Image (cartoon, rainbow, N blue to C red; front, side, top):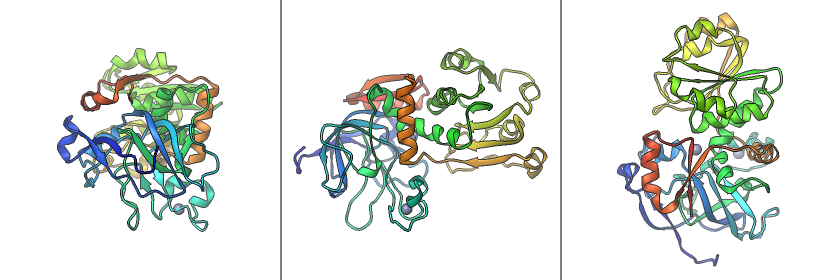
Length: 357
Ligand code: ZN
Ligand code: ZN
């Protein structure tokens, strides 16, 4: 693109935008730097975080805001400092647009940029330091992001399939990998939605002995089994599910974000020294209280995980290409973004909507 081409996208102007009231218009991307890549967006997944941001659910959003952090497209302008991306490459951007990247930052210098404590910038709704401007996401024609957080999409991976992996996928891939999902391990996934469906696919791909999907209603059983789960637990509908599955899992990744989740019951499914990792975040962030004896009695660990590092994203994309992982995505035209977010909010996605330009 020419240096002074206009950036356009779906602007959220206030809290009401989440109800299908985003407005198409121009926006001013972050100030160009020679570390940046401009991307002509071909696809952008719809993530639950997009809705939280549009409605100021987690904190006050700096409107106007263009959401979308599961971006795939073509590199159309590449800064002179960028080494491994060239104009024309098929690339993607996830939920993180920048970290401090200082050589003395413990996290940035050890490939854990997603946990940088000195200036993380989210892909949208973020404010860059100084006069660099704000970050804008992928419900748009173009996106501008620092090259460290722009990833080449491996051949063989469809763009619409790759897009939702960049947030939904990596959010579960990172804790599965880090906590040893693989041969010899029995893994439980709480929630069979956008994130949970990726977790079933990746736990399978990583070679876990057994994958158990856990959700409230029996109605998602067939879908979970089709995705590759060995077993399914419906916590509302299976009587005695706690007793029947007690101490059966080595690792649980929980993708649900209800503040009323039966956390203590989930923890009861862990074997001794098992690990429970929460990746879903309720509005306000409060989890149900946990009694210390619940942790002590089984020697279990309760933890969390936030997106994933650039290295982990590259590894996940390559694994997905190599194993031909097929997420369940439904394509929607970019011009119908308002209708798509309303359907997403209503829980109709099976399992991820991907906007297509
Ligand atoms: Zn840092
Ligand atoms: Zn997301």
